[in-house]
Length: 117
Image (tube, rainbow, N blue to C red; front, top):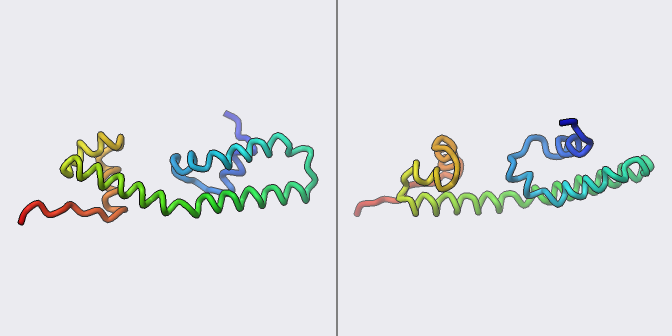
């Protein structure tokens, strides 16, 4: 698959991001695609201004990511609680492998609730 200017722009603005975060930025990608179509008709100043505007849109979208992390943490916690902290079962529900689930537990600092009294 040939590398397009959209790929280069995304790589420049975002670096390597997780696929789910990239899906969240889909509206910005659409604006980049529309921008690519008009690229040849723009002067250098117009091009620079459009790129700066897109960069600002991407930065604003990525600034919202911590809220998503909170939602993901709550989701993982809920699945773990619903599965009785059965890692294999929870990983299957979340559609991740057990190692990934252990990494999420560590990343989100999740703790198994005390079962005794």
